[in-house]
Each structure stands twice: as C-alpha cells, then as structure tokens.
Length: 415
Image (cartoon, rainbow, N blue to C red; front, side, top):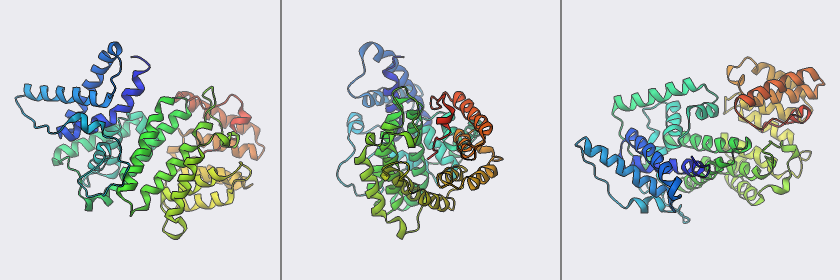
C-alpha cells in the first residue's frame, strides 16, 4: 500500500463506519462494509489516485457492498437521503441547538449511541474506541493501561450483551445525554492521546487523530454548553496540542519540556485554552478531572521557562486530582512535580509505593520518573537501571522517544 494511502484511510475510517452504522442500522454489517470499502480503495486508488472526497467514495462503496449482500440474502433495506451530502457537510460554524435529534456529526452521534446504559462503562469505552474510532486492541490497551487480552474480553462481552438483549442502535434523547457524557468524553480524550503519543513517537500521520478529537470536543462543547466538562476537555486538548511543534525534534526524538523552544508553541491555542478555563471558573465550582488537568497544563503553557513554572501549585493540583482519578499515572506525575520543588524523598516514597502496582510495570514514564528521583538524590547506578528499563519498554513499543544520553533522559518530565 502506498505511503500516501495509509494516513488518508486512517483518517477516513471513523467517519465512514459511523455513517454506515447510521445508514445500515447494523454495527457488524457496517464494519464489514467499511473493511470491504477500504480493500477496494487500496486496489483502485493505487492506480487512479485518491478521490477528492475519500469519505464519500468509501461510504458509497461500503453501502453498495452491504446492499448487494442483503439482496443476496433476499432481504431489503431502505436507505434514504443523499450519502454524498451527508458525508461532505462541514462542521457547523454557527451555534447548534441540541435537541437530541438533529446531530451535526455522525461520529459524535455514534459515540453517544454506543454508550447504552445496559453496557458497563468499561464496555462502552472499548466499544467506542474499537467500532467508532477504529483502534486496534493494542492501542486500546495502551490507552487504558490494560492488556490486549482483557480488552478482547471486554469487546466480546459488549457484543454478546448487545445481541442477547437486542439493544437497538438508537440515538439517545436529550434527557439521556448526561448519563452517557462521561464515557464519550473519555473516548474523545483517548483518541487525542493516541494521536499525541504517536506524534511524540515520530508517527506524524496520527496528527489527524488530534484534529479529530479537538473537532469532536468543539462540537460537544457547543451542544452541551451548560456542562463545564466538555469545555474543560477541549481546553486540555488545546493546551496540550499547542506544545506539539516543540515536542519532537527534526530527527523524531522527544524533547523534554524543560528543553523545548517555547517560541514554537501555538500561542493562539494557548490563549484559547486559558480563556476556556477562566470561563469555567474552576476555583468556584466542584472541579472535575478535565478541569484540574487543564489547569495544570495552563500553568505549564503560560510559564516563560521551566524555572518560572509554579511547581508548588502543580503539586497542589495533582493532590486534588488524586481525589477524582484513581489512575496510578496521577501520583507518578505528582512525584515528578515534587522533585522540581526540592522534595525528592517524598517523591521517592510515592514511587516506591506504586512499584508493586501491576499497571505501572509496563508504563514507561514510571521508570523515567524513577530516574529523575534517583538523579536528584545522587544515586547514579539506580538512574542507569531505571533508564535501561524505560529504554527497553520504549524499544518494545517501537517508540523513538528515548535519547541515548542518559543524563538528558533523566530530566524528562512526565506531564
């Protein structure tokens, strides 16, 4: 397959499968039709070139394949509307009033549809990531700090439950949206993180995932203006994406935050993200996970230099975040922030407590954080051991992020 086709097909997949599920009202059939369309695209586009509207082309081919299959099975289906018009519509620029029916985006509609209340929250998230966003089991496992085998079990359970309970693929009405929002936001955030991680690892084609996540964040924020969580997530994604131009050097090697050229950051995105956080008034409301994370990112993004960063405030925010988020990643990040406050022994104690946690054993930033603590305490042999473990994990994950210079790597920041 041409190198040019891969990024185009990856970017088109979510919109194609979302549209086909809406048209065909059958998840498995829509996924099969999407795969057929992708195979056909590889065969045709190699010789004829990529069409002007790849999504419309794929939806048309997938729909036709599905209809042919249904006819062979002596079944019929009614497909209404102009498919090309459906998939070429741009994201609305005007405010869209949410009524639970007139959704402005097929993909967002399907994300909410997948969050059926009779599915466990873990099943909802993996179903969205697999079906709607096209993630592999390995990508889902990495994002959720789980094993690919456990992800496969969750997917199997979700599909069995859907078949057994005959769950309809119905778009939820307005009253059902709040109960499904958290799972949808988590899926959008994992979509963003996958693109963010791949760019850090040198896979620049995954930048389309970041654009997709931010687009979904903008739409969700408009549709649910009364809820601060979508705006907080959008702010977090904007602030994080703003630093991407300086995060990887010309050789694809990860550049730690303290060494980044802050003039390369997208300051207009930082301004927009900070404005969203200010509008939410984090300090005046019961904060949530995205609000706190966005506040941490805002501190980093507004600091003129690493030395000017308000590390004590970041430590306090991570302490607050631990009240809402049980992930082992949070205390690891707090330990890093403590190191920059000169509280290395506290950081070491936190990381020692997390060492037995199964989830962190394959989490590369854990060993980077250990190396930072050991460097601060002058334990050179422990620094080398921790960095070797981090490098081995990075190699297994086909990452390019680790530098050969151990002293530089020890100063990586996890944030």
